[in-house]
Length: 214
Ligand SMILES: Nc1nc2c(ncn2[C@@H]2O[C@H](COP(=O)(O)OP(=O)(O)OP(=O)(O)O)[C@@H](O)[C@H]2O)c(=O)[nH]1
Image 1 (tube, rainbow, N blue to C red):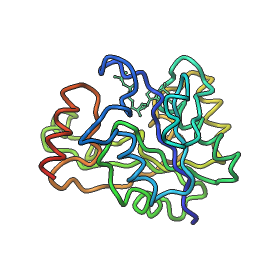
Image 2: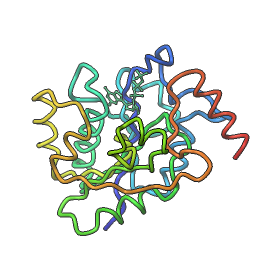
Image 3: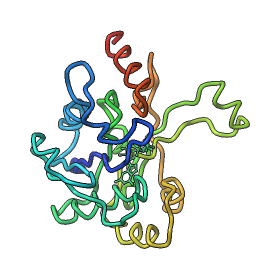
């Protein structure tokens, strides 16, 4: 399988952060986006940034900026659709998505996702991590893993199906991936959760502490 094209999801409203672009916040002297791009670049083909509003604020990154085509901030699936439409124009067959607010995501993200997709007609895989005992108890003990809906491998072939689902009002990522036999790729948690994401000013301080402890 050729390397998937990379799409960075940065199309949200960052309400818990007080608005603006979480990706442009600084962590250890670099923006979150710069950290995410550094991690993604060796793992993906061409990369695009999915963001809404004036794209000029991202000029320094030198990446194509693609906006949601489904309006009203429909959530990350709208960003996945924008990414798939962009990839189709590039002649790509799949994309890997990462979130702009998750600076420590695994360096073997694409390797594990593509391994999990082996044998699938269309690669559709979400990243997961094991639940802690406390989390498992809270969920009634049923679910063993946390799914990370913004970290996945997505097939261009299903983009029109996704468009139709969004137009029908579907918003929950796993409802769509479950419908299409989406698989899971398990990532170990060694020390700290690699999918730790920055939602609040407190999270940013915690990320700084994680960086210093790394
Ligand atoms: N394209 C797109 N991406 C979104 C949208 N909403 C959230 N995302 C992305 O999905 C990921 C997870 O988003 P959240 O943290 O749940 O939402 P957020 O808007 O970033 O932050 P909050 O408003 O505080 O919930 C981030 O990478 C967001 O940029 C949307 O409407 N469109």
